[in-house]
Length: 283
Image (tube, rainbow, N blue to C red; front, top):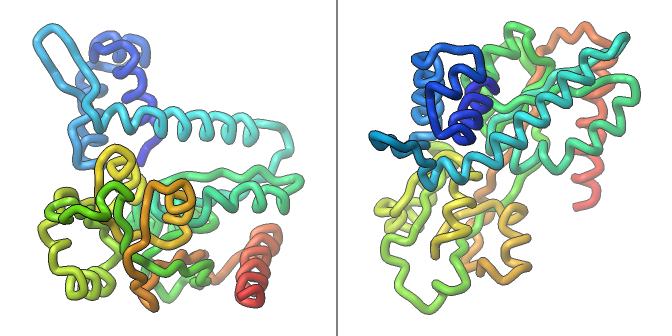
């Protein structure tokens, strides 16, 4: 996803007017409309309610706004760091789910190994990741669905068991259409639907972990989540574990070109490998 689309979205949300947003961004109104349309297609949700004399954020738009602001701020900080003289940088991109499951919580530790290097982080879909890696537009990719290629090496970073959870307030109630169906890949989905046929009639279906968690925060729901993601919600009493799906799990992978020319990149990949060994030993 182009970060400029999120910046455009935030400007429209602030001005509540496509024309004013276009003026402030030095774009045509049609360009602003096109960017918002592509965002809506990407998230498969309307972001604005367009009335004759007003423009209002939808519920989906309200949920997207803080994440858009956070990503834009992170990108601006990264750009500033990259513009410093004599600064080297490594670029890493992940899918949204891999960001939530792995990269977000490990980013600070990664930076600790880059004393004189700036880290550029982006979020995009799996198809874009594959293209960017092969075109050398990024150094490293992190995803939950590894793409097949003879030109890359793939390192398994983490594995989290999937379990069935429900809102604490829903424990004594019939589940009905309270299911949230998350896409965990074809094989995993087949196993899940065989174990829980009612999930086929889920009230909401999404491939985005963040969308699912946002919906869960305001709606009684039954959902299958990685244990590591669900644990904080269990600790606060918001979720209750109903059943573990072990050994079914969701994994995060590091992907990079086999022919790595950068010594610094090779050292950074070694950091990932040592982390994996440490985690295996701890278990």
